[in-house]
Image 1: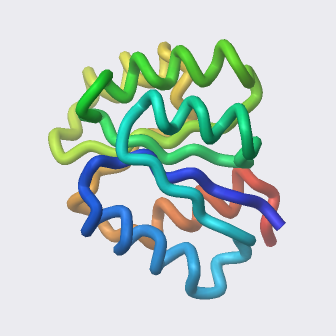
Image 2: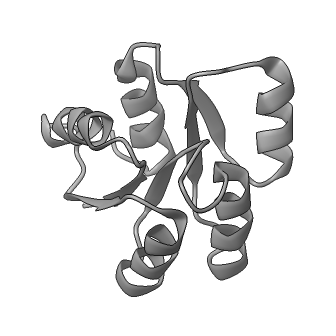
Amino acid sequence: MPMVLIADDDSAFRKQLRNVFDQDSGFDACIEARKGVEALAKTKRQSPDLVILDFSLPDMSGLQLAEELKAITPELPLFLLTTDYSVKLEKKALSSGITAVFSKLDDLATLIANARAVCGIE
């Protein structure tokens, strides 16, 4: 079963997202990272099937992290979460290798449905 890495410095949001993934979503495990450097190390060590990253991390932007993750694993699906969604940000994110952009203010069910789809979970 697929594994997801959640990279977000907000521990309450990480816990909320992890709980959603733990509720019969079809994912085997959730790995968490608070910073971009930690997400890079865990990606190299544990090879997640999907990375969900926050736009604003303490040590780098989500777009910078996406570029570094794509250099390690070009095929890795990446979802970007932001509280300040805009079409301009989405276009920039997609050109940086992000698979999809989601607002943290929206229902997380959409994110889970997309995660299941990109990881081939029926």
